[in-house]
Image 1 (cartoon, rainbow, N blue to C red):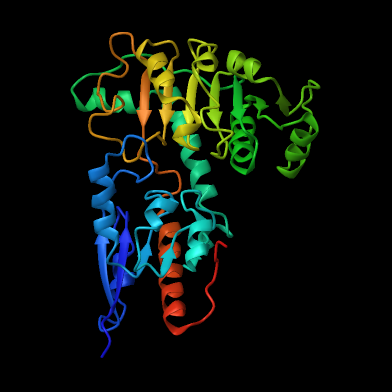
Image 2 (cartoon, helix red, strand yellow):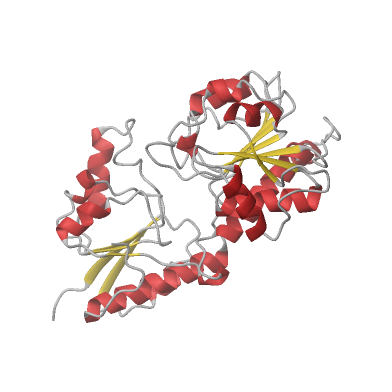
Length: 359
């Protein structure tokens, strides 16, 4: 009798995958779950001993299940995993995987789509989370919750979003979805910028979203402006860009310094889109009202991270609301993703065609 196939399931913090993988025939599959995420192999701050620890963890396994971009698989790491024969990921795009290196090794990479939301990869969930962060920052929900639970009462007043300016940095699917909500629900005026965005494209996106190209006042529904004008005029700046070599660090201190003292900065896209040190400096000096962040340069946040303090909102600092990359972490979505991972694992073992392959 042949030895069971060794399977590693990485970074499933909620344990949603466990009943699915544990239901596999134990005579065929030996499954190990790793809930703690080690530092990324390709991060400049990752020491060699941690890289070696990651390799030692993964090297014995024939199949690895990973959750989107939580554990990156660069070429250098893939080269150190001689036993790997199948990589299962969630979503139908994972920029943390070197697909070329997997292809060269002949290792299939199978994704999974969000059947819970008509094939989108958690986009509805991310939109809801972004809007929740904007409202929470404007209404001081995190700070007020802490104050009341600590025995206090009112501290600082909330701000209204009605009629204010919403600045979308990026007007793709998620940018449009959030901008539409903020305009329709709160009457916010929307300005938008990205490197290749034109007014013609923005008008088309407004039509696709079921909105008029212009309001009754003749102003564009999604008004394309320069990057500088967006940061100078927006009351809420929300980031909706895809991370790439070109977009990395696209928002830096010179942009953040232009924001209104009353403005709110929101990022639910990717941490490295923003120069993190510059954002921290602006917030620690209290130069804007608040920031609401779901993503960071390094995830999970190290315990000694400058973000990990309860002093935000005190002694002149801006208010800061943090969530642990929860934008797409919705139970129905994750449940569907892991169902598909197990389905692909069984297909692979039988020699059948995989679904949602990434190359």
